[in-house]
Image (cartoon, rainbow, N blue to C red; front, side, top):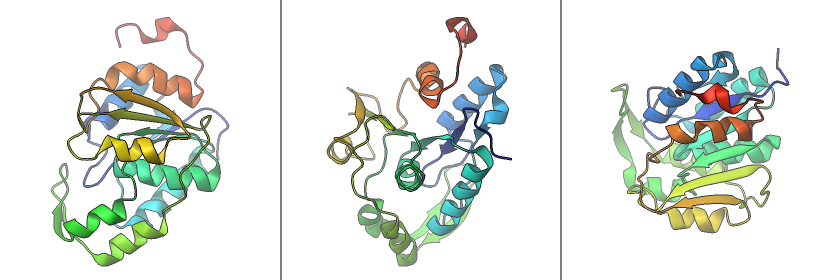
Length: 202
């Protein structure tokens, strides 16, 4: 049954998986705090429609989770946050990825699983169907960007999420350096109650 307790739905990016560095750091952190049951990190289908169905099912299971989306996962998180009025923390999010993916049609390989698949115009059309107007709710959104992102231009996200709370750090990269050290802030934004001692030696 859905719970009204705080929870987190982590949404990985393009050709990624639950084995990505940020996903593993978050899972380990919550495990140490005894909160593993409040986290879901689904292995998303490469098909946007199927991935959204997986995420919708996870939202039903969790109730009102914080959507924590990285890269393409940030795009999915935005669509879901607008649809369900959920909070979202976005890490170097992709903005309007259908426009970028036109240049990547063809064979793909998942970085972590080795799965091979084909990026088709149908995938791009499905992403385009998920586009929403730029959100303006500073209370529900927190966007983390690093200017050294070598995959996405952080300025696109600055412009798109201009009405939201932004954290812009100089340097870094697409993986968002220092993510593990900021996990207490993630849990605080998700609504977890804790004291500083909970994070000792974490």
